[in-house]
Length: 173
Figure 1 (cartoon, helix red, strand yellow):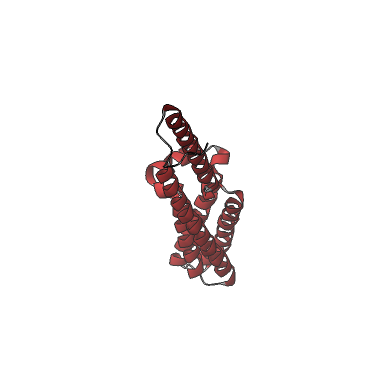
Figure 2 (cartoon, rainbow, N blue to C red):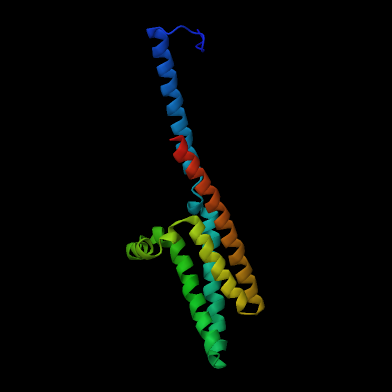
């Protein structure tokens, strides 16, 4: 028997309607939790590998440029290379910290740099790092900087979509 708005209100019909509503609620919660799990773009392995490669490339290109800046006594360039080494190291640590169980680094990020826990915040950091690499004008720095800017844009887009999914899940649940 199909229940609709013309069905008389009896105890049996109310019990069936209640059971149907309960099943529908469970189905929506299951779908919402599945959507939330699939929206976790910050933990996807290909993006993490790309970020590790980008951070490593930043460190290597900065170390190589650091020697030239030191020999020519370019203090501002030397300082920029040190900052880029630092940022590249943070990017690598950010992506492998859960694999190393680096609790002090994770506590520092949680306490002082909470925006780096989100995919969008990581994208912002990667974009800024890429811009700093581009400002050090040579071919290697340009390639590394453009890669980091592209990676930052990808992380930002994935984080924005993830945030949208999380809003939909919170409304559904």
